[in-house]
Structures are given as structure tokens and as C-alpha cells.
Length: 319
Image (cartoon, rainbow, N blue to C red; front, side):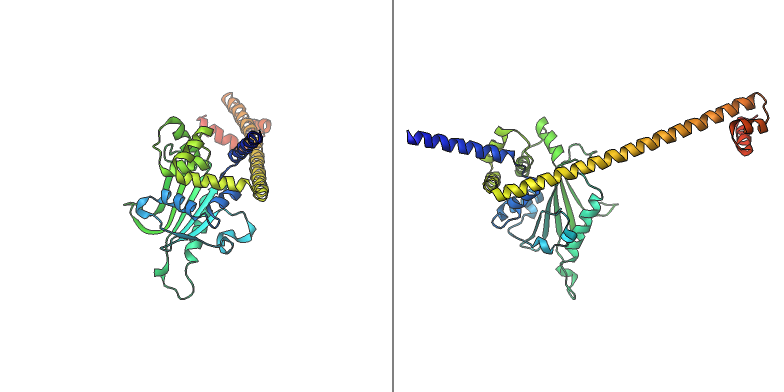
């Protein structure tokens, strides 16, 4: 009897834990950093980067860098680069999650990547010490809307004429989750390790699909265990909720600003349209008066047009 009650209680607790874990968004800034930027989780980051870069450019090992010293974090602004690490061969890797569109998106990325590239040298160092900077951006919005099927795009410095890459100094990877979500639903994408990881992180699929990913992919299972560990800490959950609320407030502020800008533009457009319509009406009236032989002085007096404007109408109509 005791064992039965104990087992029932444990099952209930497990069910509650599973429900809580499913409710979390792994792309939340706090949770994502816990999974990919905290000591002991290097294997998660290694898996994500290697899946993104491909087998020919695989990373053997990496070390986390102190984000507090990263120039991309000056001024107390939100950390757009959630993860910063150096590989065994010196490559600098940034990984970020971007939940919504923002102004100057490309300028920010290029600037921060360039800062990381330049910061590798101290006074007197030679350029041979410079190593490539790789930026991976997981996007919860479509960045390149014209590319319907291309959810993973790679950008480097290329020659415009022959499209050859003469420098691997800066490299950008954009992973667009909305496109991947549509392709998965339509069955038009072949599953890979990267897709399985992104499907889990982006919650692309229902409960059973998430369970399948965890069962079939040891790397996804390791990340899932990290989410379960995160959920068990009330301190982690408090930080998670603060970040989620900040993200919601930011989106609402952006939406409000866009609506106000749209309203101002709409009002300005109506005013311009009314003014344009009034001017066209006056010109039409003046034209009819010219057709009837009314003198320019009378037309100017009646419509408020200048004599030069009336004369321009007359010349334009060939009268």
C-alpha cells in the first residue's frame, strides 16, 4: 500500500516536471546561456557548432571566454551574443539567439564581429596571429524573405565578379527557424543533426515529436536533461521569467512604436492626398475656364492661382 502511494506520488511529480520542462522556451536568453554557455556544457556548444559548420571544419575542443570582457557587451545593453568561445585552433565563435527583428541588425553583427577580430591583437603583434571569427545567429524570424527554402545561409567576404572567398576572417551563419518550421511541416527537408537540435530548441513539433528527438539523438537528450536540471532551480526560473517579461515588454513597445509611426504616416498620407486632390480640382477648374475663353486675370482671381501658373496651364493645353 505504501509502495503504491509512493509510486503514484512519484509519477505525479514526474508528470509535473515533464509539463514544466515542456513549458520552457530553450531560446529564452537565460535558459539558452545555461545550456550552451555554462561550465560543464561545452559538449552542447561543440555539438551545435560542429553541426552548423559541417564535418570538414569540425571543432575538436573549445573554451568559454569571459563575456564580461567582450566589447559587444559595453554600456550594460542586453547580450546579443549569448555564447562566446575559442576553439582549439584559435577560432572565435559567437552564438546568439535573436527572437525578433531589430533596426541595424546587420550593422550590429558586423561591428561586433569586427571588434572580436581586432581584439585578438595587442600592441606589437603581427597579423599572422589573427584567427577567423565565426558568428552563428539563431533567428526566430525570417531574415531573407525571398529565399523560401534556404533556412541556413552562410555569408563571407567574396569577390563580386568571381564569387571567390579571399579571406575567411569573418563568417556569418543565419539559421531561420520559421522557414525550417514550414519545411518540416511540409515534409520537404531531410533530417540532420542540426535540424534535430534546432527542432528541439525551437519546439518545432508536438509532445511526441520532442520525445522522439530526445530518444533518438543523444545530443538532444543531453540538452533536454539540461532543461530538466534548469527547471528544478527556483532561482533559475525567476531569472527566466524576468527575461521572458522583458522580451514581452520589448516586443510590445516595438509594436506600439510601429503602430504610432503607421498612424502618423497614415494621417500624413491623408493630408497629402487631400491637398493633392484639392490642387487637382483647382487646376481642372482653371482648365475649363481657359477652354471657355475666360481671361487669365479672371481665372487667377477666381482660383487663387498665380498668373504664371495659369499661363503654364494654357501653354500645356495648347490654347
